[in-house]
Every structure is written in structure tokens, then in C-alpha cells.
Image (cartoon, rainbow, N blue to C red; front, side, top):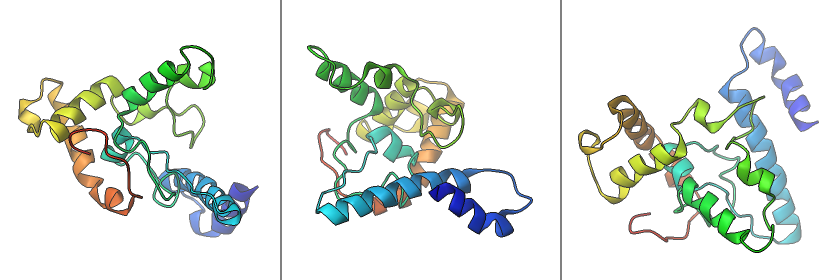
Length: 175
């Protein structure tokens, strides 16, 4: 219902344009606003859900999934998040297996996966580790050159988002 209301309000302005990032981000912002309202109402602390991989390359929405007072996994790469989920489930299913097995997605449009825009997380996380924690230049990283430079550009461009993110816990050598 909230997205429908936004669509109706923005229809005169967006008329004749194609569905894109602006509409996708609205969905994240609606969810973020609803969660912030619940947190405010009941005096909860909203935890931001962005992991190190997403935060590094800006695959997150300001005033949307970046909402929160603490970013508890902001220094944990996406592949490690999945490893931790499997570890948590080692004796009993705490996190539904369908969540772990499903392709990562921001779920902002139909059939979207993160890999529509990003390299596979195993590759992305390795490149980010080399750039961030090992302080390597793109030329020194042993992956496809175009992919490395794409990740480097995303990392560089996302600084403005990281500066607006809630504080996070530090668990690596270089958060």
C-alpha cells in the first residue's frame, strides 16, 4: 500500500520514464521508515543490515536498509555472513535454510539478484579484501582486470554512503 501511494504521488513527475533505481530505492526507504517507526515507538534499537561487501561498494540505500543505530555486520563480508549462518544452523535450524540457499537479492524488483550488478560474492569479497585490508592497488590483484577496476570504482564512489552509515562493530584488521 505504501509503494502504491508513492507511485500515485510521483506518477505526474515520473510519467513517461522507465522504472529504475529511484523506484527501487523507494521500496527500501519505505521498509526503513516502517522499521524506524517501530523502533521509535517501542524504544528499540534498529540494527542496520548492511555487511562489509555491500557497504564497501555502496550496494545499500541511504534512508532505507542503511537505517539504524548500529551496523553489527558492517565489517563482515557477505561470504562470511553466509558461513556464520550455516554455523548457527549446525545443530538446529535457526535461520530458515531457504534464506541461506536463495540467491542474494536486495529484492527491489522482480527476479533481481545481487549478481545482476555485482561480481559473485566470492570474487567481490576477495577483491575487496585485497583492496581494503591488504592495501593493494588494482594492478596488483589477480582477478579479471575489468572486474577489479569496476569494484575499485564502486568502492571509491561509495565513500559518501559509508560516511552516513551508523557506527559498526570492528572485527577485521581494517573495517
